[in-house]
Image (cartoon, rainbow, N blue to C red):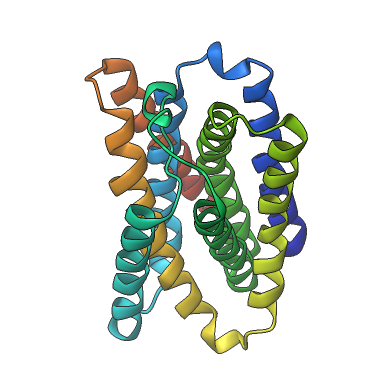
Length: 230
């Protein structure tokens, strides 16, 4: 089932990009989607993923996950953005590679979480989907502005989505005793993406709706944690 979750998460790369190219992104301000995704991703990390991590042994791995994705995002990766900011980006093989690497790690995190607890795997999947929607939208906008053909754009998004199950398969080959360490690395990735990428982007201009949507995203994932005790 964890592999199916990864495949579903990957499909949102293509779906969100396709909807953006059809004008769906013009109906909702990207910052609203980004704000909700940031809250959900951070909440999933704090309330679901981190409690499963061994802090004494895995704290350095978490730190490496944060630092590595900070460096990658600044150097080669595409980050979520509104349409005006996206116009300053360029997309090429290096940027596509960065996006793909992120997807592999997310897919591995889904399966690692599922092996520890199926409910954790589902929560990670939901968090990944929510942050994948603005990334898919961003990728589509950048490729459109770079004058890529629609088949090229959709093929790139589809291939990026397939890297989720690829990461899931890799994680499935790793012995169970190392699954916590995968989660620690993924948690570092999630903290950077949520707090260092998505959240600042949603607040390029102050907006109370953005604040409320960020809190709502956190509340949704916290609510799932509360339901586990019922």
